Image 1 (spheres, rainbow, N blue to C red):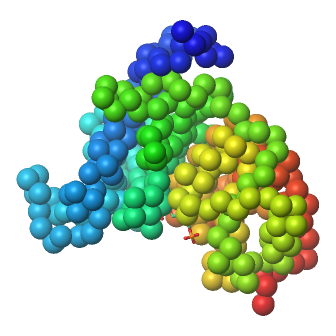
Image 2 (image 1 turned 180 degrees about the vertical axis):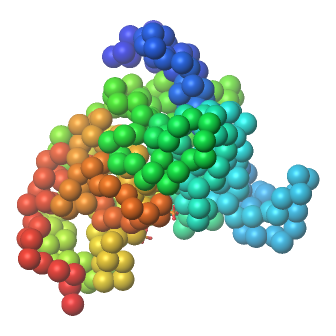
Length: 336
Ligand code: AHG
Ligand code: MN
Ligand code: MN
């Protein structure tokens, strides 16, 4: 049997893996373990919906209701409902901040954990059978347990994440997460309905050849970004861009690469959202040996001011991100 670097066999179920990790900490209450299991369950449910979306025609709104009296909605809204419900029923989460909701979703005030999530990432790829994902971050609340959740509980720096991860609905479905002690990857075994350990101690190659950026925005990029993209071409690098952040990130972490979503004239703060897209992937990339930055600052050290705050986002293999940063000149502004 193949043993992972952690001494657990490849094929260990996620439940067992989480339990064994929990047992290594005598102070652990089991609440975080349960929360991770709740997220995994929600991921399996979303996977089922994604897999059947073509058959069920749930990629667009019907204007009708299902047996539970819910409007049949787009998959990203369905994912939001499924995840929120799983976290509510799991009973470990006091509040959720989601891409799909303007305000905090209040769950059980007696719980310690706040979850930030992008329930369905890569919306433009839903209808065309291309990889999409879910992103999540878990924080401990700052305000006292039992009282109402405050904005400050959600507006925490990424350095305060106690766990983060993503689920990738790709050619296979994977759940990848970190609690700050390495990055662990699990593949859904469909006939068992279980996530099993397939990629232990995931590490980003220190250098790579893939650059991922929406080059359709090339003329709107800052000059340094255009120069960097030109440099990638001159060096014969490979362009890969799916348009689903989770999928682009996952490929780059496995193969070595850089993902860039810069600011443009149209989006002066970039497009991607700090709290429920960037922080989780920044935590994971750092745990895997890579770098995540907004060009000026480590992503994890940005103090969020708004739930849906955006940020330029550059992350991936250490040497590639360092090279990209070397192109930034402090005096430059968005191209006119
Ligand atoms: P979401 O579907 O959650 O709104 O996120 C879409 C994001 C991200 O997944 C992707 O990397 C990016 O948008 C693609 O944007 P462009 O189409 O502008 O390249
Ligand atoms: Mn997204
Ligand atoms: Mn989304």
